[in-house]
Length: 308
Image (cartoon, rainbow, N blue to C red):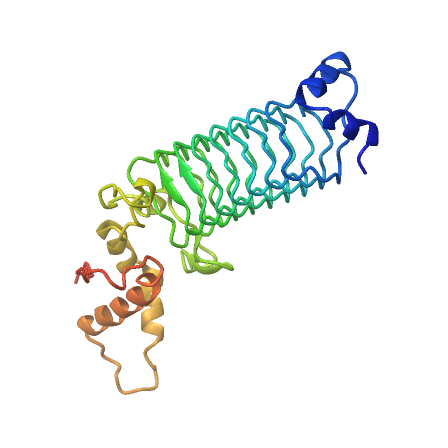
């Protein structure tokens, strides 16, 4: 529970609070489990503070210093956190849904299992942050820095991404359903053994659980995208699968073996033409990928045939 003396001091205003922090650098503020909903904490010095489970919903924390603060399970939804400093903070299981994070610094912060649903993360810095199993659903990442961040098993469904840096990011096990990207993003040296094309760990890519994505196969998911659109914050829809990637999939031994397994060995159809196999593979590919990449209403694209 929060220290009542610390709460009283905070309620005196940010100027008085910051002066008290400066005069008492050895005191670690305890504001845990407190209700600070809608409070004006513009520029407040909350570094190293204990804010575990604190309710800061709709608070104004622009430019506040929360570096190395303990914010596990804290409620920060609908907050204005623009230019706030969360470097090294513990934010695991915290809720930042629909928060405004313009220019906020989360470098080396722990956001494991955190909720950033619908958050505006424009120009935010998540360098080396732990975002594993975090929910970034429908979030906006424009000019966002994620260099060397851990996004393993994160939910990235429906995110809008443009001009952001994903270099050296770990994306293994992330859900990328309906993510919206364009050619301005940097995906150099991404670590991604597999992804899910649907929520709840459905539609794994690669299909075989014993196989991993090669680096060039991941790159195929983020190339050949349409020109940048002026709609939806300038982020274009998810790209079509590149022809290069489809060619590899069509020629992939796993896909061909799966198709052959559909043929009843007891039947009289022991000789199946190459055209028949190609046709069956096309059906499989369309069922696996068309829905995932929102291509239902787009003009059908010619599949690359298997080399005879």
